[in-house]
Image 1 (tube, rainbow, N blue to C red):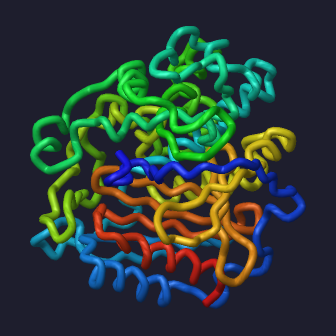
Image 2 (image 1 turned 90 degrees about the horizontal axis):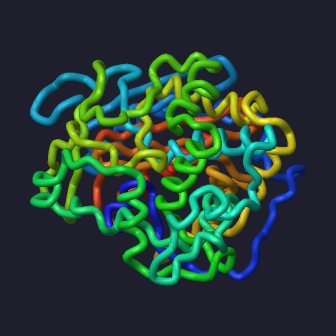
Length: 389
């Protein structure tokens, strides 16, 4: 749902041109991203996020090759002095999309899927209602949010505290989520605009299953999680809790409203758009492997990094571009970083990597706020760390 930006959704903005970023200039700064920004600066910024934004707990990790420098702030639970656990489990939200896109591109490299295949080629009759037409939408458009498909999350019955408490354990099948989206008309003609759509990634997960005969999460596990040794990363499936250790998650449903414990909930509404659980070190290893060329062949990597403008909502002028399951964000010092954050009901995961994944930063917050500037300090932390401020 856009109001809570639960999986990282943003408002639809029409874009008439598709801008490709040359691979020669796609990678950001190659100098040391952390030489002027270390653990002390990370600790200071996390403390600011906790004290000034009202976040219960936060953890950050600076990545420089094989080196890791971490800090934590706040508490693991409201009303206690229990510290945020080191390398605690959290829901990564929309960063799941990068995993799913990687699997699709691996299948493309194997000749089993084509990016120009239509949705109807794999899922005949699934996208047919209210002007939404799967025969005109391609796999590439699903992965790049240029399909025009409306977002199902705006129709989920968890938009306020009362609804959340009533429906937090509801279970959804992927087809049900797609049908929720198709209650609405398309936002624009396929390929004629850009709008973040979780619906596209539910369909991508369904296409993976159709092409391989296995659930999307089984393919993610076999192709990414096991080969990289990500021992703390997995699909939530129907699981409603988090393994130990973890900080409790809190969701704010209205400005200045109470923080509601949202640690226990069904993530079946996230599925292939956002249900993966991980730790900071696992997520860092994934990004370093992906951007370092260990998961995709050069041709598929180039396809992933070919971007279109992804304008942000409101007055936010941050320059952002969307590849296939990956985002490029401009740095204040020049260049930009690759990553894909994600928010769920209670967790926020922000990340950014430069120099082909060698250097980067990951931030986890155990609180999802609804104030207009709720992410400003978190995003500033990424910019400061990657600009060596």
